[in-house]
Structure formats: structure tokens, C-alpha cells
Amino acid sequence: VTTEADLYTASDQIVILTPENVDRVLVNSTAAMAVEFYASWCGHCIAFSPVWKSLARDIKEWKPAVDLAAIDCASEANAPVCSRFGVRRYPTLKFFHAYSSDDTVGQVFRAISRDERGLRHNLIDLMETHKDPWPPACPPLETATKAEIDNIFENNNVEHLALIFETTNSYVGREVILDLLHYENLAVRRVLSTEEGLVDKLGVTDFPSCYLYTPSGNFTRLKVQNEARTFYSYALRALPGVMRSGKPTTVMSGIIENTTSDLWRQFNRSFVYMADLESTLYYSMRVEMASHPVIDGENLRSLKQYISVLAKFFPGRTVVRNSLISLDKWLSDQDTELSYSSLKNVLDNTAQVPNAAFPDTEMWLACQGSKPHFRKYPCGMWTLFHVLTVQAKDAAIKDRQEVLQAMRSYVHSFFGCRECATHFEIMAAESMSQVGKQNPPELWLWSRHNQVNNRLAGSLSEDPQFPKIQWPPPELCPSCHGVKANGEHTWNLEKTLTFLHFHFSSERLLSDYLE
Ligand code: FAD
Image (cartoon, rainbow, N blue to C red):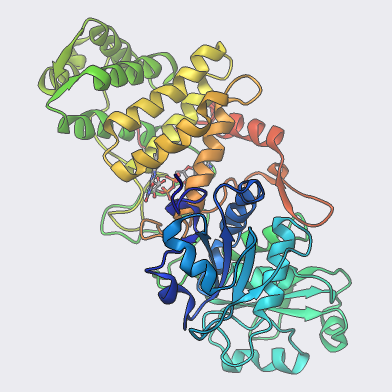
């Protein structure tokens, strides 16, 4: 028995169509829609679903202009919908223009080449077939002329204008325009190499290349490591004042300024701070754990594993390490259950153990948020486990795997955000068993964290000062990023691993504000 959610789930950034929502999604929508009609038993559809998912992740920022959907035609309930749109072969891809009427059956399309890149390009071509009305959230995709650029600041109240110079067969300009469509204080336009007035004025010789143009008529070339879509998008998002729309504009720089009523502590984004790791320990043991009056069974095992991994690998001050070791020892004697009050007692009394002290306050630094409800503990939790996986890098593989296992079971048993815990458990169940020497824990955690960043980009929990990007950005680790011959972005996993070992190493941890 199959269900409509067989190949896709709600977290795939794909709208799952049903008889109930199909009209709402496809008819008179302000966004264009690209729909995959599939049958969950069909081998081609199963093979194609990772491409559709990956495309959905890749163009998630294009959403208000064009969105992806899928419907399982193998489900009896959905059959009338598939028949209404004349679909008999699977998978069939259909494009629905914005503001389609209820008798529209959609336009069949294929990938120019049967991969994500080809599909993306084809979608852009289809978007451009919109006449009137143009999808309101879609910025202009056509090429700009010199006359238009000369007047652009009169008609647009933007701080930055980025011009992407490219040849006629290039999609880079349109891709970057769509990648940045959620961002304010920036307009992106594309200019063809044949637009001699502008090409000559700016002395452009490379295609593609990107120039920033200011209202005073000055221009500078955008410095990127590779002249390719992803590098332009990273660099433009990081420009001062460029901010996801609907979020307050504040200064963005390496050193962040205070925007909360709390005391703001300056920090450098390129470093990891011990204060965040200690605050995470404090919060997890003093606040999160406190909501479990009795800890037994699986939860007790999770707690023991968490503390045991911390006792082995937490690269903290000697007093904190001693308190973790003493707590680990105490826990190993607790067999069936313990009350939180007895645990609290031990935490309170670590001060009496010679040369030991458990962190006694929360003081966030690189995990501060621009508003009180942003960041802090979840940021600390990620950071703590990145540090622990790196600390364990030279240990036996069994011990390295145990670090991830400790995170998995801690999150499962205690992490207060239950939705987060469910998602994390799904990711862990899918792939954590493949972690080993060839597929090290540090890289697994890095890539899953990026998967979460991808899902949460633009969500309410995103701090506008700390947009959820695929991390590390090229400015932090140039060698982590590469491009294929066709301009598609790739991660250099070897260099990324080296970077993780450097960035999260205990030698680089900063102890500002601690003693
Ligand atoms: P965070 O994502 O918390 O990252 C902290 C720091 O780690 C960043 O500032 C950066 O320096 C570094 N970093 C970023 N990406 C990576 C990476 N790929 N590898 C290594 N370092 C990196 N929130 C939800 O709304 N829904 C969820 O389902 C959800 N699931 C979560 C699951 C877990 C296990 C955790 C720990 C948190 C989860 N959260 C979830 C919270 C969310 O992921 C963020 O932690 C939170 O929104 C704070 O974001 P942040 O800007 O501080 O960056």
C-alpha cells in the first residue's frame, strides 16, 4: 500500500499535492509551479526523486516566484487529479504559469540535460515565457541596457546594484537574481557582453563577472574566488546592509554591534569561544535536564553517554574537566534511576571536589543573538558537538562514533525542541550507521548541520544577523569551495575536513570573558 508522501516528505521543500489542496496551489497562484506527477512504485520515479529534492533545496530561495510540487498518482485518492491534468506516464513534469486558470493542464517539460542543472535552466526558460501578468515576486530577468542602468537609482531605493556581465548562453545572471530575491538593499541585473556601452565604460573583459555600482557612478569588481553563481550569491548576501526582507536592517560586519537590550559582548566570527561551550553545559544540565524530575531507562543511558563523552573529550578548563570526570564517575554508580534533585546536588557540590567547578552561568558570545529569542543554546549545542567530534579525531573509530551517538541520544532524550529532535533522529537513522574511517564523524555532522541550515533558511528562527548559509562561506575557507567545469559548485571534502579540524580545534578556542 502506498501513500502520497512515499517519495517526498514535508521537509523536502516540495509541496505535496492532494485533491484537497490542488486548486489552491495550482490555480491563480502568484507563483509559477513545477509539478512532478509520479507513481511511487515506478523505478524511474524513485531514481528521479533525489534530483527533484536536490533541485528543491537548490532553488528554495526562488520560492515566491517559482515553487516545486509533487503528487503520487499511484494513490487511488489522487488518481482523479492526475487524470484531470492528462498524465498517464511517470514521471511527468509540468509547468504551471503564475495565475493559471482552473482549466489549465500545464505544460510538459523535461530537463535540458536530465540533471538538476538542466532542470534549473529549463525552469528559467519557462519563467521567461510569462507575459502579462508577470509573477509579482519575480524580479526582472531580462538583460539591462546602459540607459536603464544609468537611471536605475532614480527608480529604485537600493544601496547596492550588482551587475552580472555574461554571454548570451549563460544562466548565471538569472540564477543569482533569483537567489537574491529575498534580500533587501540590493538589486541584481544582468548585462550581456554585447551591451558595448556598459562593457566599455566598466572595462569588462571577463564573462561572467560581477560589478557593484553605486549611486554616485562608482563601480568596483566583486571579488570572488570563482566566477560562478554560488560565489556571487555568497558574496552579495554578505554585503553591508544586505538583509533578508522583512527583517530589521542592522550593521553586518566581522564584529557585530549591539542590537539587544542585553549587554552585547564583541566577538570575532572566525573563532569558537569557550564561553559558548560552557554556557551550553550549564544550560543543558541546569535548565534542560531540570525538566526531567526522574531520569531512568533510555534517558539515563543517554545522560551517562553524554557525560562520558564530555569527560573524555571536552577541551575545557581543568576545573570544568575535573567536574565532568567526577560527575561521570558518580553517574556510573547510578543503576536504575536518579532524580534530578540528586543530580543537581552533585552539580552544586562539584565545588567541594578539589580543583573542580561546573560552569555556573550562561554567558553567550559567538552564540549571542540580535534578539533575546535568537540563537544561544541550539547554537551552543551544534558548536559543542562539532568541537567534540574534532577533539576525538585521533581516537579509535569506536570512540569517535560514540561522540555522534552521544549527541543523537542526548537530543532524542532531552533536547527541548521536540521538532528538532524528530528531524535530527530521522537524519541519524538514515545515515549515521555509515559513519566510519572513510566517512568521518566530523564530516557527517558538518553535512547534516548544513542540511538543517538549508531547511531553516528564511524561517522565523533565523536571526537576520546570522543568515543560515551553507557553511563555511568562501571567505572563511576558500579551499573548501570549488567549481566544476560547467560552473556548478562543489565542496572539496578533504579541505573541508582539514578546515573543521582547524576551526574547531582546542588550540584555537578563545577564552575571552572567562576568568
Ligand atoms: P547554528 O545553526 O546554531 O550554528 C551555530 C554556528 O555553527 C554557526 O554560527 C556557525 O559558526 C557554525 N556552523 C553553521 N553551520 C555549520 C556546519 N554545517 N558545520 C559546522 N559549523 C557550522 N531549529 C528549527 O527551527 N528546526 C529544527 O528542526 C531544528 N533542528 C535542530 C537540531 C539540532 C540537533 C540542533 C542542535 C538545533 C536545531 N535547530 C532547529 C536549531 C537551529 O539549527 C539553530 O541552532 C538555531 O536556529 C540557531 O542558529 P544559529 O544562527 O545560531 O546557527
